[in-house]
Image (cartoon, rainbow, N blue to C red; front, side):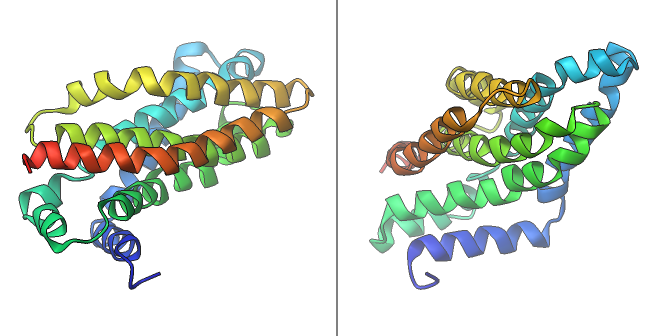
Length: 224
């Protein structure tokens, strides 16, 4: 694994992130702050919080992923690492896949692991906590893939955050609706296996197809 360009990119991105802990902590901090503020806006009634919890938790996860999406390629673009990657002859597809998986490991995976605790803060019933974690683990992989596509298209722009959001939000809304619906069905005691399978299929499809778009976007941004 470590000899392939996928492994090299993945390990490099993870090492760079852990040297800058804010890259991992900022999405979690944002997620936690928003969840803690929700009772102030909706009121302390547990029935109200539990009713809105699935959608709120998923929306917050989507926004937390957007926070870090803009900087996925910015550092490598500025220091010329992406240009070196292109001229090296390595597989741009595998390199792009490494960026997607790295972004998910740093944002989506931590959010999924801590989501049951955040769900309890919003009085989400115990029946939905496990489904929330699984759905976020799968769904945020799709969100990371779309975020990398948008980041590759806008990395040459110094203030491309707004454009990035406009590009990828329409793609992420269906995943948001599906993910929130899975959790709501679990809370209501309805079967969720089929919807979880759909999320898993979307995740695999995103992993297979988005590296193609990311590679093309990198070439466009670098004008190669």
